[in-house]
Length: 68
Length: 147
Image (cartoon, rainbow over all chains, first blue to last red; front, side, top):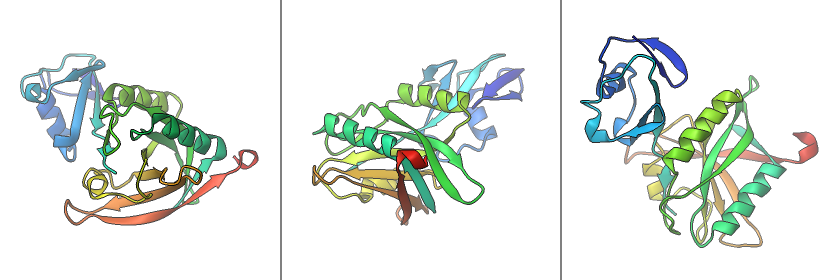
């Protein structure tokens, strides 16, 4: 199936989970990453079970924060 | 590294950060990495600090997503982020360093310690957790006619 990751189309295996996609994309420091699928944010606890579908648009957003 | 920001964008950051006091203000920067090695900020995003405190900031992920899409639509590269220190100097705190997970990013910090003389500096942070090194970047505020 074809999905879009960070604006780029990619061919991946059917039923790929968000967790597997994170591995596939070599996402650094995944504990600081928020994932959106079709502009809906996915809970980290659901990464292992959320199966992606044909045409999904995925964004990896790095947590941005700090102190004073 | 040299990094440039237009006077108008600089003024927008200062104005927004003053308005958000006593809380920290934050946002994103986007632009281009030029062939001559100069990083040019072409657009600043003024976003919501969902922590709403004077000691921390977290950028609203929904606004972050919207900004990233806007950058892509306008052919801009994400260059990093900015935030204000309402009561402390313009330098990365320990928490800033701990959460600076992108070694390719520029981190801009605006100090409002002296309200009449805001200080904006840019920093590069790299290295593993606990061993982060910080390098100050040369930030140039370009007058509008130069931009």
